[in-house]
Image (cartoon, rainbow, N blue to C red; front, side, top):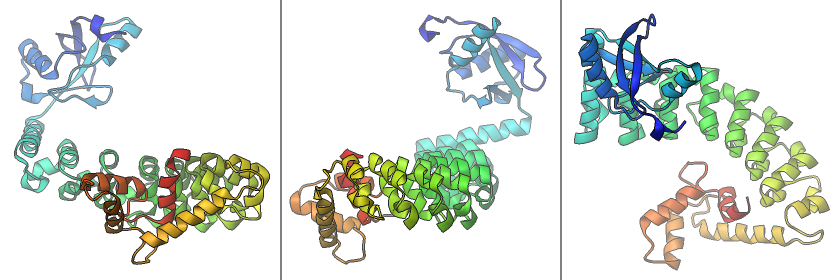
Length: 364
């Protein structure tokens, strides 16, 4: 259905609780919700502040457009389009107005969440607005009711994984929440706030590994020896093979899948598989060509050379020093972007495998 071809038409406004019709309004996909509320006030005498318009479990904001969905559904069912209406109590209306005011203060005046009214900190929309438009640390000032609201915390983690530090403890104890969380960022499996028990849960670990192969690093030893879990990890990121059990590093088909995903994965193969002709061919090597292994050894030597303090990681400062040697005028923003791209673990340091993954990135 083409939105541009749809004109405004009569839409039914139905009571959310009992489905009774409140009134009718003229609306189209591009109609603004506030204008519809004005029409409801005119037709049904219900003050705008006491109105909440919803459809398909979505609560509209005043500046949103109606959108196409209700018109598509109406055409499919051969009926008039429907908007659902919920009348707020005076107390609910007061809270809604406080939330609108708080968002304006954050947006227009640079206020932080701890500066707004306490009732606004209990409002999910206000909290998520602060997280998105200020920084993830704003979540720490939200009410406990918001921090323990699982849907809200998934929305917060969608905005930034750094919100993990402020998510309510009861969320981390919930299995469904964990699956949803690691499906957003598999590396959440390894953070301290996540209970250890989930690293031994096959389903949670599988979801994490399928989102980010390196989540295998944080799995229990038993699951690092689970063929299905390891296959999920190496199919997402070939070099995750490094975290598999010694037995699975010697499994031909596991190694083959890893190498197909990332040629460099062959360096983690065991049991003589590095010399297997078919695997070497999959890695872009000839039967006797040791070019890849030699290249990796050179990269390893270079990594250790750059690792000035020999702690096994490249810090931002070490990377900055290296890059400025080649280009003294390089912008700090460019250096930070490059470092962030390398730091796939998001732990403010780059290990050898992250360094190699970045160098071989064009081949993954």
